Structure formats: C-alpha cells, structure tokens
Length: 455
Ligand code: B12
Image (cartoon, rainbow, N blue to C red; front, side):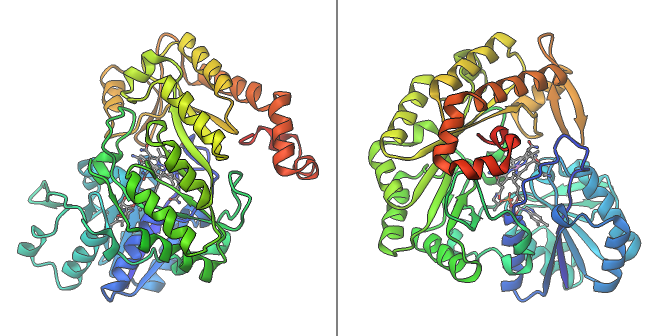
C-alpha cells in the first residue's frame, strides 16, 4: 500500500497560506498509481495538521510500503521532520519526496538519510515506475531506466534525466475521491457560481520571468489536455461533487489560442453551464479570444501584472509593457469579463519610488480585485540566485526568502503593502462596486474586515 501526503509550513511561518485547496499534483500522482494497480491512500496534512506522533501511529497502523510526500520550499523543514517520523515508526518503509523543491534541489533533500528517493518534475509516470521498482525488490540496474529520479549511491547523488509526458490525455483524472473534499474552500470571490473546484490544464511555460521557476518543473514547451478531456473532467466534477464553478490554476491558460477557442466552443456545445476563472498574461488575450471565453462562462481573468515601473518590468524579464496591460484590461471590460490582478513589491533593485509608480498604475488600471504581494525569492529562479549571492535576504525560512536592500526590508515592505492594499480597497468607489456586485446585506453581514479581503 502507498500513502501519499502533504505537509504544511509551521503556522507562524510567513509562508503559511490560509487558502484551503485540494493538492492537485499529488492527486494526479495518486490516480496514476491507482491506474497501475496500486492501493493508495492520501493524507492532506496541510489541511488536517496531524502531529508527528499521530503520523507515527497512522504509519504503524497502515503499514505502507512507500510514503510519497509533496514538498515545496515552504514546507521543506516539515517534510524532513515527517520523513524522520515515518522511518522511526516503520524503518522498512521507503520515503519518496516529489514536488517543486526537490525538483530543483534534490541534493539538499538527499542529505537527509530518512529520504530514500526524489522525483524531479512531473510525478505520474516516474512515481509509478519507481513504485513498481521498489515493490519488485529494488534491482539496482533497473533504477537508471526511470526518468526524473534522484537517489544516493555510494555516497553520491545520482540523477536521471527528466522526461515529459507528451500526451497528457493518458493521465486519469486527479484522485479527488481519496481527499476530504468537503473540507476544502468551495466559494471564491471571482465567481458567483458555487461550489467551485480547481483544475490544471496546461503544463510548461515558454517565458523567462526571473522571479519564477515553473519552466524548470514543467519544461519550456507548453503541453495541454485536449478540449474533450477538459470537458469530460468538468462533467465528472459536476456529477460527483456538484461543481458549478472552476478555477483553472496554472500559469497561462490562454497560451494556445486555437486550443483555448476550441475548448470554449466545446464547453458551449456541451451546455455545461459552468462559470470559470483562469490565470493568464496580458499579452495572451485578444478580442476574439475573450469573446469566445465569455460565451463559454469565463467570469474573471487573473493577470500577474507585477509592476507599473518599466525599469522593474525589464529587470524581471516580464516581456509585457504597461500599454499591453492597459489594452488587455480594456478588452476584458468591453467583453464583460472581470479583472483580478497582482503586483509584486520588493524585487531586488526596486526602490520605494518604483513601488509608488506601481501603486499609481494599479489605481489607473482599476481592476475588480487587486493584490499587492511581497516578493518571495524561490529556489530555481534567477532572482533567487542573485538574492543569495549578494546577501540581499531577510527572513529566510526553509529555502524561501524575502529581500532586504538599502531601500527596504521586510518590515517596511509590510507597511507599504498594508497601506497600498487598504488605500485601494477602502476607496468609496471600490466599496460601492463590491456592494453592487455582492449585495448590500452580504457585504454588511461579512463586516468591515471583508472589505479588505480581495476587495
Ligand atoms: C495552486 C497553487 C497554490 C495553492 C496550493 C493549493 C494546493 N493545496 O496545492 C496555494 C494558494 C495554497 C499556494 C500557496 C503557496 N504557494 Co503556490 N502555487 C500554486 C500553483 C499556481 C498551482 C499548483 C498546481 O496545482 N499545479 C498543478 C499540478 C498538477 O502540479 P504540481 O502541483 O506541481 O504537481 C506535479 C509535480 O510537482 C509532482 N509532484 C508534486 N507533489 C508530488 C509528490 C510526490 C510524492 C511525487 C512523486 C511527485 C509530486 O507531480 C505532480 C504531477 O505531475 C503553483 C504554480 C504552478 N504553475 O504549478 C504555485 C506554486 C506551487 N506556489 C508557490 C509558492 C511559493 C507558494 C507560497 C509560498 C506562496 C506564499 N506564501 O505567498 C505558498 C506556500 C504553500 C506551501 N505550503 O507550500 C511556488 C512554489 C515554489 C517552491 N519552490 O516551492 C509555485 C511553483 C509558484 C511559483 N512559480 O513561484 N499555492
């Protein structure tokens, strides 16, 4: 039996996010293992917060041959602590770690003797092959045939090259049936329809933004599920979980224009009556595409604008100008699609003056929802290397870091972030818009703190 689990960063950590969403990636891995005939259980400990003692008891009871753990740079310390507890409870159990952090830093993970194997990148095929290898008795010659795995051998780390799954449609739907679906968030401000669920339909990113490392996990070529397969998953969600809204998480929902239009046509033809929100870039939308998306139920698009300062946009290699963003927002408005967007504050080399430019740009854009985030340097990204090499870090926990320069530190960024967020959210125009969108009594009932939340 195989147990797949998540861990959470300590609650006091700045990386602890209250948003409760199902772990999609791990559920894909679970489904692939089930399809290959393994008995699988899942523990979403990001949600359930079981103590290490509880985990030990659980491991003794379940007696799994393998435990697979998802690990991000935020949850790295918890992941190691959990691996230790598993080995203490059941020394014969093999611990496999996968996800973002081990994909970029396998060596740092394999320094811990409690971790036996690392899966780098896409997990479905690699984990299935590794589980077969482990359960068949670990013939050393066979492991080098598995793509995307790292392990210790004679005191060294051995890594095999990653290989991506070309036809994503071969993957079964994420194994949501193994998760406590009733405990997850089912309402989201960007959609009227509820309950909503998350889906991910595109893997890979061709762009080179220096704050992001997604392309190292998924590769630079974009792969997407076919429109037919996406529609089938939406139908599956509607039938099994009563889903009426979808949040398509990921980097660039619209990157393949033709395929996106095909998907919209199929959603319309299938009369799914579903509302959805997606993430994309401002240079990846056009009028005909937006028209088609709106007709297929798209209510909101989330854009990562990141900065209003052309100097900073160039520094982060975003490849989008302010004019393109203004044009994209105008088109969305004309086509009746709501806009959510986010900005980053605290990029190395950014000045408080640049941040003021960003704030003014945000006000000018006047999105329906706006979020100012403090920059986090993530391993695997170009900016992380710069931050570490120049010693520009503040509050490093696990492997993530906030930036400190002569112009700002974490505390001053926090103050700027709060000021921008409340100045924007509490402007009479935005409060009125929120009341118009959600109704006076809903807003009143939820209280003044609600106005600040994703206003
Ligand atoms: C949705 C999302 C969230 C949700 C998470 C919901 C959830 N329960 O999963 C929320 C909003 C809570 C969130 C929070 C944060 N997030 Co986030 N998030 C994402 C996002 C947009 C999509 C994740 C997703 O579902 N992908 C689709 C699935 C199919 O892919 P996947 O999860 O990567 O899984 C595959 C592989 O990684 C691998 N795999 C994963 N786990 C395992 C386990 C095993 C055993 C194996 C074998 C394989 C394996 O196989 C899977 C299938 O192929 C990604 C960006 C992205 N494009 O992926 C960022 C991303 C994962 N987040 C990131 C960050 C930094 C954060 C935060 C720190 C943000 C913050 N505090 O401000 C927190 C930290 C949360 C935490 N404790 O780890 C970074 C992670 C970087 C890193 N090195 O860790 C990413 C990559 C964004 C980025 N480019 O910077 N996030």
